[in-house]
Length: 222
Image (cartoon, rainbow, N blue to C red; front, side, top):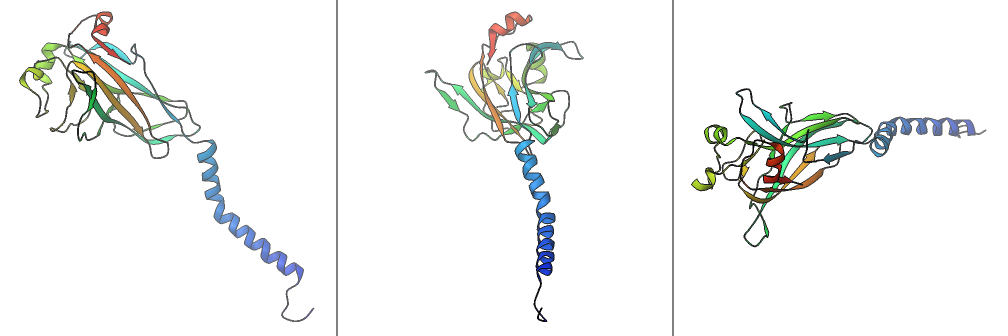
């Protein structure tokens, strides 16, 4: 063999080294791709107007309150990280029955039931409830839950309202629903799972009933 030329063994050695080097570099990305494709988290929103989604309960002061919640389930094969629930949009039916979206509505977080954190992790096959809102008995709402929306009229302020369960609210938009027909869209966002959303139809008469069976004739959520 002439000096300066490579033999077959040298070519094989160099090729093998390059192959092992490329494999070492690509392995983490391939593993992550496979994990995302075959073991990715998959979130679903479920709801029914019955317990434990919707139910009557008492506060520590003894006042009655109805809570309305949906369930988020991870049907995938890995943990969904940094999941947040967002109130994305509101639309209200006008006199002609046409739903008019709330103009320039700024999305706000909703409350994970019983947790208080804005972000949670959801393991595979685990579920968590999220509060859409609640209706307090009239005396409690009149004393403790007046709307902060600057556009609300005095007569609307005195109506019994469906109050959204958000950690904060903007003064320039509705923080509750007055009697009427509404569409409320919620969305779930996660660091590593696809966004999912659902629009709820809420028909609310504004009349309080202390019995669940009677109350669910006054408010229907689907």
